[in-house]
Length: 539
Image (tube, rainbow, N blue to C red; front, side, top):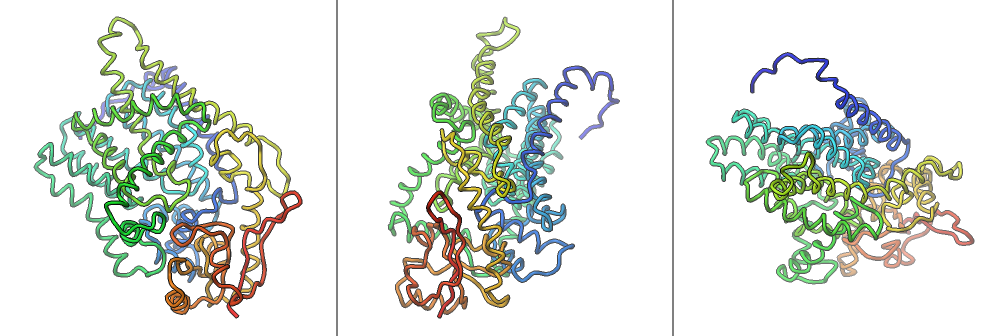
């Protein structure tokens, strides 16, 4: 791969480069402050899956039946929870929060290095990477203990290695790319789109080591999938079962025709894809119209890069197709998260297309006005969200809610144009994180509890929690499912899981008088009492 020559220290630390380093340090400090917290920023399941799996993998934590159960039934790949376990995230929420924030920030650095490998000038690479770091989608996802940061680093490292291979004509870089693709797929199952793109890239370019490289890229993920099939539990929502159910017994559109479901699915997810893409750039409705132009540019740019037979072009197409056909409708507000991992790629592709189209027009100018407009449009889209988040970060809140100011709702992450601060979401987080450990005393350690958010309940109660039987089951099958699972306790939650039911507190109504209420978790909102959950026991 060649040997670098001696480094000219004075040239390396030139004033422009010192400015870039200083800017990165300042952004790092902001990310660290933003991510610092002893409570989790989400009440959804994935964070708890990762943390409990990390606890199971950790060499420093005692064996936990709850962690073993969650890790055994989790459909998620192992690399991110393994990294969490090795960096202290399994024992300490603060450590997990900091690591997640730093991984997301590091993805912008990897974006910079990939751009340099694509022979983008240093200043342009710096601007694009900095703009990505200050997008609301990037720094808001840094709040959550999710795998996107690590996946972004690994997927862009693969793109970097491919770019190096093309520039140097050194085939060994493709081996590095294959390892990065394999690691990305062991971080998120979405990495299969990257494997597919890598396969097309190698086949189209007729690389003589195509099958070797594909084996390196795909076999680890295949081995993990087989291992989970052979050793994993039967509880939860396995990806293959979820996909099959969606297209044969759709629980939302009530259709059993796969073709009809596919048309509904693509139409619905296309809208959600666009909504998620827009929301990662701007959180105000007024910015959506500006983003429309940028978004259309993204589509043409991805197609153009595919035409040039570039891996990043193939990857965006495969990943987008995967989003359109996959049943993400199970996951509320998830579109922003799933789209995030291709945003830096889209930003580069659009810049590349702008450069190609405008190069001849502005050949005699020292700068390209089209580039300036593009960079300015992205910055203007991001500014309102940054102003709101900064204001919310410094806003005084009641002392008892201070540990919960990191929840995404507080930062307006789920609603547009809502400038009014609302404490109810912080109250919800406090009630669950403080209340669930208390009600655990009612549940014997060898018993289990039904809940539509089982990983959340498992994390805080340290009891095994399982999904309840689905609402669509008839009474006989419903009773049999309850008997087979063997739990005697229920936590009826003020939340829904569409794969089981669209009713709050499910399955409280269906259980009726068979369940005896034991305790509830609630908080006051004005003159009303908001019940977050009810613990019940089979009579």
